[in-house]
Image (cartoon, rainbow, N blue to C red; front, side, top):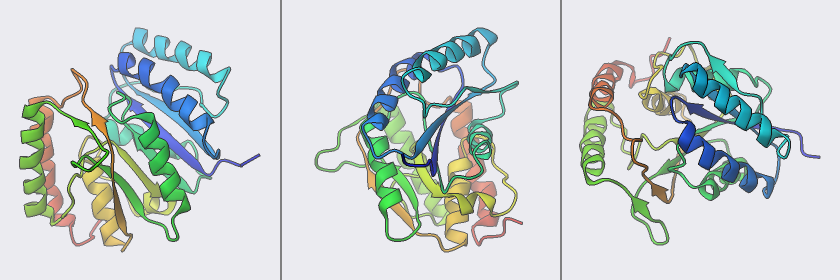
Length: 245
């Protein structure tokens, strides 16, 4: 029996429809893998009815997949980053910490592939999935989100000097030690940016892995949330040299 050394967190907020399709596929794919991974869903303050539905669905799946943990429920919505860190904190003994969006835009096979790649690597690294056109990888994305992402990527390069093809894809895995590098500042979608800046500040390699990705209707960021990301990138420019204390 392989002792768990990795926790994969799925933050969810009013996304029970996507989770209902994705979670069984993810669990089935992990069950065929190498083991040592636990899955933690964190419900980020949705309605009581949504929370009860997800609780029942997870309880049903746990009869087959014992690595799936009971649902963690936050009493109010506090943001993607906060939900992910809550899930990580619930498993303090893990060596690796990961997260994936609950909507299923990232196929379960890609999740398992990135987890395996990270855990087998010769040295610790922050592994991030990127949505770039590559042979064998299919990216299905609404045109307006593709356009917005290109603009945002240029903004991130300008503000933060993060020369990466994609900073916001919702699949990343880190060594647990990185989560303890000072107090965290970003609770929302800018959590990804802070994670990348922290890795750079401590000299942790950032490894990209192209994946297939399929956008779902309703999963795009609202205009307000997208604007908030631009503002956050500008705000975080003060920490790009590694000042997180």
